[in-house]
Image (tube, rainbow over all chains, first blue to last red; front, side):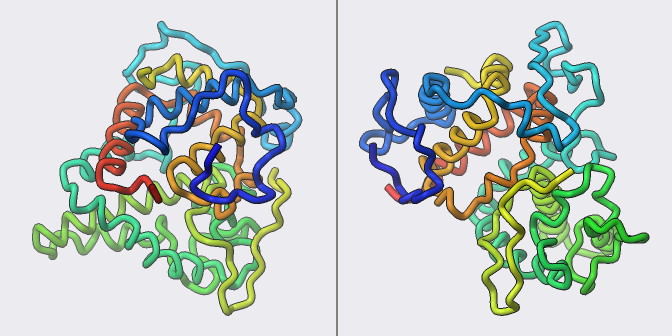
Amino acid sequence: MTQPYDTGGLRPATDAPTAGDVPPATAGAPESPATLLERLLKEVENTPGDNSNSGDNSNRGSGQTPPQADPAASPGSGGNPTGGPAYSPAGGATGSPMNGLMGSLLSHPELLQTIPTLISTLGPMMRTGSSGTPGAGIGGRTGGDAGGRTGGDPGGKPGGGAHPGGGFHPDRHTPLLKAIKPYLGPERRQALETMIQLCQVWDTLQDLGISLLPPAADNRGTQPPPPSGKEG
Amino acid sequence: MQLDRKSLDRLLNLSDDQLRMLLRRLLSENGVDPGTVPLEQLNMGKLREALRGATDEDIAGYMALLSALGNRGGAGPQ
C-alpha cells in the first residue's frame, strides 16, 4: 500500500493491510471523502486492534460512553443524542459557529484558498502568545476542559484571559475585533468575520488537542509538549 | 456511502487505538504527514463527544467543506 507520506514510526504495526483491505484511491480517480472514510473504516474495523478504549480516556473525564444511537433524538435539530447539551465547538453563544463558518467559507470559495496561508500566518502569532509557558503551545489548553477556555493557560492563573506574553488569544481579541467591525468596509468586514470564525475553529481544534502547526522547533528553543497524555 | 449518523456511530464504536489509526490513515490519504499531528495528545473523550453531538447540519457542512477543499486540489500530493 502506498502512502503519500512516510509515516515512519508513527505507523502502528497493526496498520498492515487486512483481508478486507481495499486498494487506496491514490492510483485512480480521487475518492470522495465519504468513500474514503468508508474504506478506511472497513480497514480499521477489520484490524484486530486493542479494544481497550476505556483506559485511554479514564483520565479525561468524559470516558467511553457507549454510543447512544438514538435515531429519535431529533436528528438535525441540534440536539445531543446523549441527552446532554448540544455540542458547541467554541462555547457557542451564537449556537453553532461551525454552521456560520461553513456558509461563509462555501459562499466565498476564494477564502478557501487563503486558509493555508492564514494558518501559516497566524501560527507564529498563536505560538508567541504561549511562548512564555513551555508546553503551553497549541496544546497548551489540553489540560483544561471547556471551562478552561477563558481561563488562559493551563496553570489556571486568575484572569487567565491575558496570555503570558500578550500574544494572540481568540477569546480575548474577538470582542475587540467585533468592536471595530462597524468602521470597516464590506470586504474587510467579511474578512474580519471569517477570521473570527476561523479562530473559533482553531479554538475547537485546540480543545481537541489537535495542532495544525508543526512542532515547536522554532528558534526560541521551546520544547513541544510531551507526547504522553498528561491531561486531566 | 453517505456520511451520516450511522457512520458516526461506527466511528464511536471503534476503540481509541482504532480511532487513532483511522485518523492517521485519513491524514495520510489526504496528503498530511501524520507525524506532524500529535495524535497521541488527542483528547479522545472530547473527540467522541464531538462526534456524538454532531448534527446532520454539521455533517453536511463538513462534507461540503471537504469536497470543496478536495476539488480545489487541496488533497495533497498525487
